[in-house]
Image 1: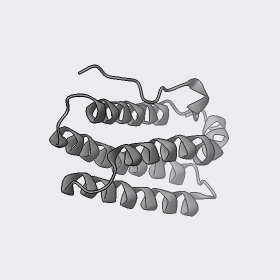
Image 2: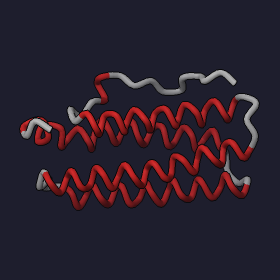
Image 3: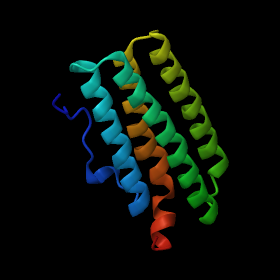
Length: 136
């Protein structure tokens, strides 16, 4: 199965922290794999495994990012964590839908992609200057 690029990283998504940028790039790679599985010859189990990988990576990334935000004494950490908690619940709900065969997977994929891009560009960008000032 050919890996179709559903979403492509570009430098405008960078928050200026190499580890965070690398993790964000990994999220986009997972989304591309999900997309390829959904349009190719992948089976439902492939989609389930990809969604599980996305959920696990989401939880792990958010833990890492929240630790960084605490170290930076980021003023809006409470709001940021609430957004993370909501997205973890939504990602888990979509994973459960894939497992049970419910829902529209392409709609789920679109939602997840749009959420991540918006979150990176609007929310994560807010701590980028603070992180850059500390030369992380």
